[in-house]
Structures are given as structure tokens and as C-alpha cells.
Image (tube, rainbow, N blue to C red; front, side, top):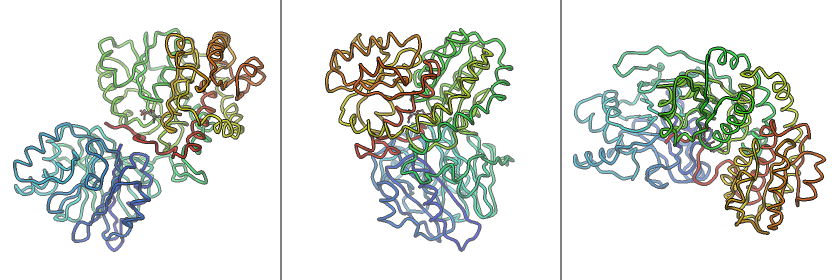
Length: 593
Ligand code: AGP
């Protein structure tokens, strides 16, 4: 999605543009199709264009703008193609009001029609441009900036985090949010608003979390927050446990590899959430059903949750895609725990589903971002301890989600053996990471493929789905994850000597059946790469290549470990294809529309 930032420096002599530029660089995982900055120094200065930040900066020298306050934006287009005119900030006709917006307005066509009839002229094809025109309209009618802003947001239908500056009241930034994330940051010499904490963490860890609909005013004297009735609201400042170093790439070429290499720690730290999870379980009471709801990678973590809970707790468990959830909502009741899994805690499909679920059922959000919207909405929250993740492909947050679900299951069923197994997982992961060069070599042999299949059964089925998703989203190679027993019901027709098949083959009760499926694809001449246990001679004989894992990792615990080589494969194949793994085509890290 898009990302917005605003900053006001207390020292009027200083220039804010270099800081805004650093902030949007740290926010570029939310959008990288265009970038723009607006500052004020007597008049509004704007620099913006289509392209990634370094390209636009090279052309326009974004840090070179006057003024001690301003706003900035990185764009992932939802309404209007990526081009210079559609880049934010969007301005009113007289270039007196500048707006940055993350979200999507459902009623912009209707508002645009009204404004055009009133004589306002539009330059862009964005939904956002209605905002500066509406503010101007209400100022023309006699309101001050704040009241014109309030009246404008009353007219908006959709999701938005917005920041506004105006040359007529050139001492403040106004902001608000509705169904889109926004944080306020406070440092010794500046005040910030930002879509996400990593953008401003270099400058401050003191964060205020504004609620939906609150109006935020930043000026040189501080931050004030008002509710919808214009009453001032006292907000608590929380200190975010993340550091600038955690959110940086360090010496790594890409965030994705840094984040893959941090997965042993993500498991260790998330296992530290034991007391919190136990408290939630103690409070839950009688739960007869569980329903997981999520999108993308988090959906794959949910699917593993279903296998785990059904296997160990014998509780009937469903898994529903968040965007399809409303069709299941009528089956919920107070004895069904609805568990939402989300790295960001801001995915709109999941938030919408959560709002439906909480009407009837207890809700639990498993998120990686403290203070995200889902933590506000859910009854219970587990915060996974993966630290900030910036690669668009979820890696360490996925392994942390799985850890939280395994720990939840182990505590729910008082399964001490499972807890002991979980304690060994960081070591198993480290063993895989130490052999990442083997995957790098393999990636050169598999990057020729145009289609790949990933096969797994039982606990390994979600692993296959996740392996395929990782590969397709960053390498742009078509890949399908399949339940290995299902392949013969159709897709086997596509298997031939040009199609690599990656088989997830941990030791356990499903091994023989999966081996039968491996033989089926082998007899269709598929090129087989098996991810299997060390010493698995059978797999070695029947596969072209193998990548081996500690044989103590059985099929139940396998998702936490067998996923790691698949992430590495996706990463190295992507490099081999010459793509940027952190910024795949058409995608963004947080999907708030
Ligand atoms: C993961 O690699 C993807 N980028 C994507 O599928 C992601 O998992 C999905 O958008 C859900 O995001 P969330 O976990 O923040 O809700």
C-alpha cells in the first residue's frame, strides 16, 4: 500500500526535507511506484515523480527543499496508474493545500462530480485529489483549515490515513486515520506522523497510537489530538521495543536475506510469550470450535494451526480466507474462538472480518506489530517477536506466527513434549541456515523453470503452499503448492521433463504416501528436488537433487524448519533471475485496501 509521513521540526531554521526523505526510504516496503515530498516556506514546495526513491531522488534531489515542516508519500497505486501527476502530494488548484493519503475512497467519483460541477479542475486520476479540493471548498465557504479538514473527512467513505499542510496556516500539519494505520512520533526536536514505526524509528521510539477518527494537529509546540466532537484527548506515549538497527538492512544486500537469517531468534523470542499465551488460555473458558482467518502467508500459518489443533486438541477447526470470511459469519457462536493471524495487523480484509467476528465470538489476534489496528479490535492479542520485517515476502514473521500457534497448542493441551521439541527448533533452523550455500547452488539449476510444483501432505501441505507463494511473489515464476495426494486429480497432466517438482518429505506417518506421489511425478519425468531428512537414501535415489535436514525434525514440527530452505530457494532463484526480492512487481508489504 502507500505510506505517508509528516514531520515538523521545532527549530524553524532547519530543513525537514532530508528527514522526510530518510523516512520514506524506510517506508518504501509499503509502495515503490512513485514518491513525493511537500514542504512549506512561505509557499508550498513540491517534488514528486513516478519511480523508485533512488531514481526520483537522483533526478529531483528530494532533500533540497526549504522549510522546517512537510509531508511525504510513497505510492502503490490503487486508483489511477503510476505517473507523475498521480504521485502524491496532491494539491488544490492554487497549490495552497497539499495532501498525502494512504487508503482508498469508495465515493470519490461522486465527490469529484460534485466538485467539478462547482468549478474545481482536476489534474490527476487519483481518488485522493478530491481531498485538497474539498478542503479548499470549505475554506472558501469561511471555515478555518481545521474545520474545513473535519468537514472534508465527514464526506469521505473508504479507508484513509491523511496528512495535510496549507500555506494559509503555515504552522501545522493536520492528520487523521480511518481503517488505515497511522502513528504519532515524538522526539526531542521534532514531531512526526507516519504510516508505520520503522519509518521514524531512527528519530524516535516514543509513539502515540491515534484512534480512528481522531484529529491530530502537529505544530512546533507539540501534538494535540481531538475526538470527533472536538474535545481534546489525552494520549499515552508508549516506547516501542524495536530499534533502528533492527529495522535496518545492516550489511546484507536485501532485507529478505537478513530476515531469513534472523529466524532462529524469531522462534526463541516468540517462545518467550509463554506466560501471556497461558493467561489467554486460562481466560478463554469453554471453546468448542476454532476458526482461523487470514490472508496470504498468514493463511498458510493458519492452515498449519488447523492441522495442529485438530491433531493435539481434537477441537474442530476451520480456516477461512479473510476476504471470504463474511460468507461463513453466520456459523459463528460464543463457543467458537476466531483467531486472526497477520504480520502487519493492518490488512483490511482481516480487519473487516475481525469486526464481523467480534459481534458473536471471542477473538484472538496473532500479530507482529504492537499497537496495530487488529490489537485494538481483538479481545486477546499475541504479539510475535520477530522484530520489524520489511521484505515484502513474509519470512521471519511467518516462522514466528507458526511458533505462536505451536506454543498455543502445546499450552492448551498441556503437551510438555511438544514444548521441549519447540525449544530445539532454533537449533534446527541454524543448521539449515549454515547450509544456505547448497540452496544457492541449487537455485542456479532451478531458475530456468517456467512452472514449478510443490508437493506436501498433512502438516507439509501448508509448507508446499508457502514455498510456492514465496517463489511466485518474488521470482515471478509460476508455482503451485499442492496436497500431494490431490495431484493425480488433475494437475498431473501438466507434469513433464521441463517441470521441477519440489517434494516436502519429512520423516513420519505420511512419508510412504508422499513417496508414492513422488514416484507418480518421477514416472512423468519431472525434475525432483526433495527436502528430506539426512540419511534418507530412498529420497536420494529417486530425486535429482536433495536438501537434507536433521532427521530428528519429524513431520509435526517440520513446518517450522522445512520452510526455511524453500524461502532460501525463492530468494536465490529471484537473484538468479535478476529481480529485487524486497520489491516484487505489483505488490506491497501491507495491504490496507
Ligand atoms: C507474504 O509473503 C505476502 N506478501 C502476503 O501474502 C501477506 O502474507 C498477506 O498480504 C497478509 O499480510 P498480513 O500477514 O500482514 O495480514
